[in-house]
Length: 118
Image (tube, rainbow, N blue to C red):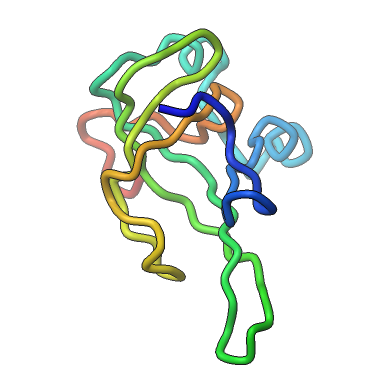
């Protein structure tokens, strides 16, 4: 797997760094503590914020934002590896099972048994 983070320009999608969002909106944007995000293991499921570049029928590009689940498959240095567990609403270019890299700063939720509305 290519161990790099994606960019809108090169890949047509990228992940949001959730830490500045949480810092700017502490009362309304919760994310797991850094220690938990730094200790993820293969088999866990995490939610990330994806920014996806999509062209409309006229060829105009827009950025769509979706929160989606990723299955953690491993770790190499600062990067986690994972596979997308959702089908994005805005594109068929990305599919469940698609491999990706992310960092702890991208994780907005860690699935736990009993999560009802996650």
